Length: 214
Ligand SMILES: Nc1ncnc2c1ncn2[C@@H]1O[C@H](COP(=O)(O)OP(=O)(O)OP(=O)(O)O)[C@@H](O)[C@H]1O
Ligand SMILES: Cc1cn([C@H]2C[C@H](O)[C@@H](COP(=O)(O)O)O2)c(=O)[nH]c1=O
Image 1: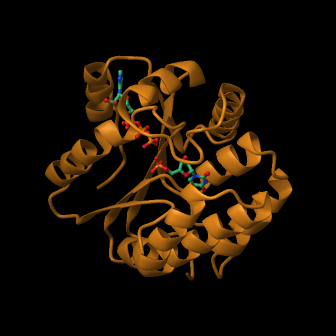
Image 2: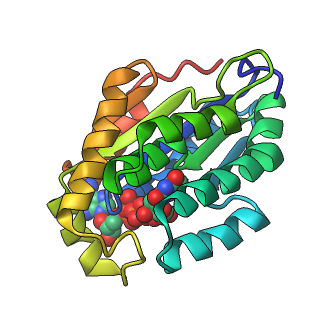
């Protein structure tokens, strides 16, 4: 990509597993379609969003692997996702809404599993760096924040855990803290949602906070 300055608008949803992203993301996409009828809305996810990305997702969410292999595969899936889906959509002026993006790598591989943040910074620059030196990032990241114990209780009611969801509470607390650290570093980009609220309250909040899309 030549530059991160494009006519599109890029939104990511983030949070620990069970924080409630999936509960709201479809309705949020519909809301964006209603609010901005002139814009096409593309909903996607990570890891995934392309044929290769979905194959990598299966590998990543199933078997154990070396931490650096895991990080590299997350960013390989992301590179393909950017090239095939995200960059063309943004260049065409579309609204892209992704269920997770690079903050998840910092939170899970960095905070949760302990990969050196400097290595993640290098991968981020490699994969999201543009020709003019800018870094392609979401314009807005909606972070669903809640304690690991609450998320674990919610998850256990509804599904069989995947590889990450089997991790212990300490892991999810570290993931949460890394998300919060990144939100503090970039308060302009992050909108923090208190995900301990009822789904109804959260939905009201998602409908009402201002998003600078023309
Ligand atoms: N605000 C809420 N209060 C109580 N329960 C909730 C709330 N939001 C979602 N849930 C319930 O918690 C469970 C997990 O929610 P959801 O699947 O949306 O989480 P998620 O963040 O998308 O997780 P993952 O990233 O692992 O897919 C679901 O059973 C959902 O109904
Ligand atoms: C992008 C990304 C994701 N993960 C982890 C986070 C979740 O446990 C899964 C994805 O599952 P979801 O329920 O669909 O959100 O993958 C990660 O560890 N690193 C990443 O970069």
